[in-house]
View (cartoon, rainbow, N blue to C red):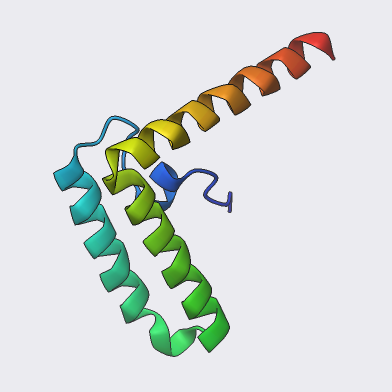
Amino acid sequence: MKEKTTLYELLGVRPHATATEVRTAYRLALEALEAQRASLGKQEFDDQFQLLRVAYSTLSDSISRAGYDAALEAAAKAASALATAG
């Protein structure tokens, strides 16, 4: 299975999701993670929980989100340039 590569994918929202959609997706992801707690090791649970917190804190703050989006765009352009050159 493909790993989630962006914070948007981690929360299961589209890049232009509203603040309400981000918040709802975060809450649902936390509930799903909590339901898996018994089957996960402590470290794996903690790691996934921390990733969800980072995703939410980044995408729920407009300044952080704008910076994150700019970084995603720059990475996509760099990957495209490498593919074209290679």
